[in-house]
Length: 492
Image (tube, rainbow, N blue to C red):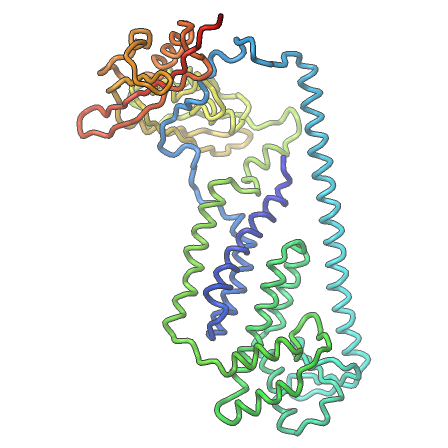
């Protein structure tokens, strides 16, 4: 079984990728900075949480033709060309050999992930230690709610929560320019931008392998700067002076990891954004795209199953040997064609049987190839479409089952079409033994396949019956049945 965390990591990464594609092509050039910040943070939160949220949809038992034509393997194993390994010892060797390789690969991935996790954690702790050294080893003074730390290092100005770090080289600036820098960093602090970065940084420790998080962090830091620049720059001449100040402070020196500093490329983008016309309010509607994206991902994760096992399944798998959950009461709802005794006999599981979700689904719908599933009772009585679902309720050490059947409408056979090597023919219709007006029956189709194979005229491995249902307003729906046959050539 694949490690649930690996599946969760893949699903989270796919979610984040989808959100960021929308951001990159539809949102990143807007100037609604507050909404851009909310979108980016929501993208992280949703990507982390959506794989856990599974809609109550049972895709595998939704209304559909419940028979599986590919399971008509009645003749498998009877042909000379079949290569079936019947020795159970050999099968077990092959089985455990495959498991061993899988476990090796899973172990290797776990080691690689652990190394990356340790390195990323070390880098984060190192940044925190450096920050602490900046605070403890440099002169600082308090003004109101903020501490100003004067650095000797040639590092661009930055802030972290209520600490504002300024290097000594800023003394050449005028008092008004220095005040603008302070106001800039105070605005970062007041808007809790450090909390955003800290959240993304901690997330990137766990998902260090995901480069999308690096792009998201960079985008979020830029949005922080754009929002503060818009607030501080003002209008007219003041905006021009502010842009000039950004150019003056531009530096190639790498800034502190947990903040955005006045480095060259960021300065260029910020000046462009300062002078850019504001986006119209109507473009805020773009941010509502997060809603259909969320719904799409929820549907997707519900379809492929959750990597996080439901509580009941998890409890079952963790139970020690000998204390497995058992089936309790079995109740049938919606059935009118068959009585409860007939359904119980077809189900084959009873009170006290081990609770196994996959086995229950197979006994009900033939999901794993069972040829005597409950759904077959209906398929042999004209019910081409069926829906059989169940709900399990835990009751002490047992799981009570509520099985619901939606019987639908009966079908009758309409046209029986036979193609031999692609050409329509009436030759083997008598051998098929299915006639227009007969009630649909899976068993009749199976008997037809046997008869065609036994005739020796057609390749038994290529007998492929295909149904084409027709909805009608009459009492019965109809279904056309097409047999695609391949004639066996005479060998001399």
